[in-house]
Amino acid sequence: MSDKQYALFEEQQRARGIDIEKVKNKIKQLKVETPSWGFGDSGTRFKVFEQEGVPRDPFEKFEDAAQVHKFTGSSPSVAIHIPWDKVDDYKALKSHAESLGLSIGAVNPNVFQDDDYKFGSITNADPAVRKKATDHLLECVDIAKEVESKAVSLWFADGTNYPGQADFRKRKNWMQECLQTMYNRLDDDMRMLIEYKFFEPAFYHTDLADWGMAFNMANKLGSKAEVLVDTGHHPQAANIEHIVAYLLDEKRLGGFHFNSRKYADDDLIVAAHNPHEIFLIMQQIVAAEEDKEDPGASRTAANIAYMLDQCHNIEPKIPAMIRSILNVQNLYAKACLVNLEELREAQEKQDVLWAEEVVREAYECDVSPLLKAVREEIGAAVDPMKAYRESGYGEKILSRGKGGASW
Image 1: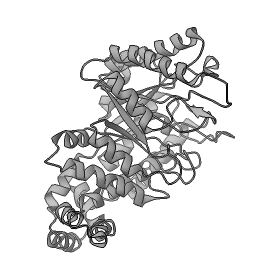
Image 2 (image 1 turned 135 degrees about the vertical axis):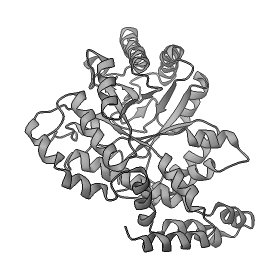
Image 3 (image 1 turned 45 degrees about the horizontal axis):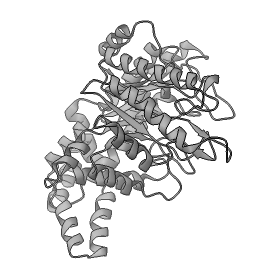
Image 4 (image 1 turned 30 degrees about the horizontal axis):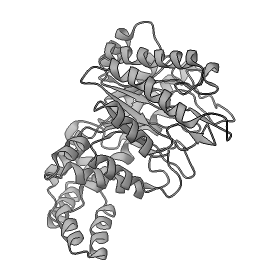
């Protein structure tokens, strides 16, 4: 990176009233968790395309994840999915992760792939199935304790396809009952992140269809329950940044699953289709982080668990993860460049165009000199994509062949 380029960028931002050192520190603190399942073979409803070099077990998944962290310096933890990542010795998996400079992040139960869950898991009319699902949730809490993870991330496929198929109110109460049992197993410093999705695989109704239902469930359960927002789990034109601001104000925004969508839950590389939306979401988060008048919202924003949840069907897994991390960093950096004092003044004066200009000006900034400087300072690769390509790791793992771990 040219020193002149960075010096010019720094001068321009200081002229706008931006504290560059503060921005750099915020970017350094941004950590984005990678998903173990994102390194395995995956596919659409029509086919799983096997790739050469895909990890064959959870230990190899962590080895690949370590490459993402090595080159970006910003993804030190890996979420696991049970039973996809089930092992005989979780302490051994934890030790393996630590030897690679990683930790185990959120534990994700799977209550949607067994035949018993055809008509739902924790909302199934059969009490035996509900017990089976609840027992698995409790198992995942115990696994989280064993690997010293502080988060259990929940998504449920429960729903119906036809009117009259099930009793909505009974299912709601069964869900609360099961989740309360799980909630009671959590340690005081743990949290459950409740995700929602308005359709798929059910097409008539989903038991946790939107952020309001997840928010209501979290409130009923207690302070250790928070809402997880997946950017692909909303109807077209949903204002996700508004949802984010609402949950921040209520101190209930616990986590993010980043991906990109054009139609629904496409699970593509984050910001591949609508980077401006991610920027606007980040801008709400940064504004909350800096809100001295609402320390609760500031603490909530600072404690968000950022995670990727993507399905790389046709692209190589590791560089796809690296690209996603870089995209998140880029848009978060832009959000940090919004002059919040100027924006607040424009809002108070109800000057619509001025307020819009303040936000747009930050979005249009080229933050590459800033991000290169940050990477140099934390010892990461200045150009992570290029560094990974030149590392030879992608060619090395081809010896694993095809037929690795998958869903």
